Amino acid sequence: MSESSENLVLEHLRPIRGRVDLIADDMKEVKLRLSSLESSLSLVRREIIAGDETGARQQASIDRIMERLERIEHRLDLRNET
Image (cartoon, rainbow, N blue to C red; front, side):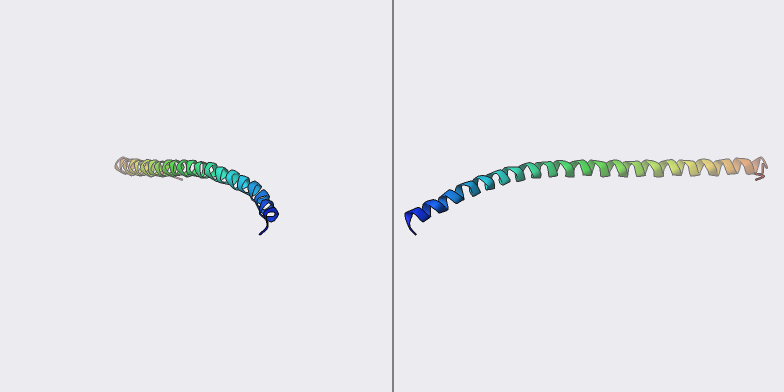
């Protein structure tokens, strides 16, 4: 290759290298933000699970209360006339 063609190649490679460096920096930021989103999603999932567990416990308590109420109504010979 002649010296002028080598210089021409180098002239084209410099801006490409600069853009590649910018892309690499952008990718670092994207990776950090993605990690943050994954952590947040994990927290949301835990909150949903905790909410489901709370709902299940509440439903179990309601079921026990309903059973007790039915037994009380039965002992008092109360009939639900609906």
